[in-house]
Length: 257
Image (cartoon, rainbow, N blue to C red):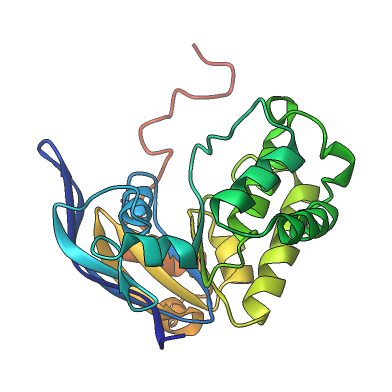
């Protein structure tokens, strides 16, 4: 594995007059649990979509484990797993059928797919629902089966967009345990979030994104600096540290009309 899991240079994306990503340069270290953090609308999903080959950039290059995402897409897709925002699944398949289909698409032998699927379903607490249609899965179950499909081919880099959004605490703890075990083996996880407490408890390395630009990058200690928490550092970096939500809401509460 190369020293950088992902290299991004001069990445731009515009939607009409709106600039979603404004010239990002970024190197994400291999073998780390990496958080891409920012407020809603910061450009996190757009950036991850371009990095994983789901959205073509207007300008710039992206390399994943040494392979150019747009010049060598087959090599890149063989080495990454993706759990995107707004996960769309084949809902008329059962959980096990979905994993079998995903494994065959990846070119894995049937016996190996069955073995890995059984292990993933067990670890992710989905064994009891493996023959249930995905359309009947809860949000947490859908996130877990999507994670299983992303991990099935044992990728070098795993990209997750808001993996804990709408997930119950039990499912979140299971997902967290699987991801920690995965990175302990030397693989890389890149996940987006706007929940700083979660990022601070999980990540080794963080990049802060706001208004389509990188505001800070580095280890947790480097990004946090002298701030008491990552949350406080984040608010200062994105320019939200001095806001008072109640200044113009003196009419709110107290039964006043």
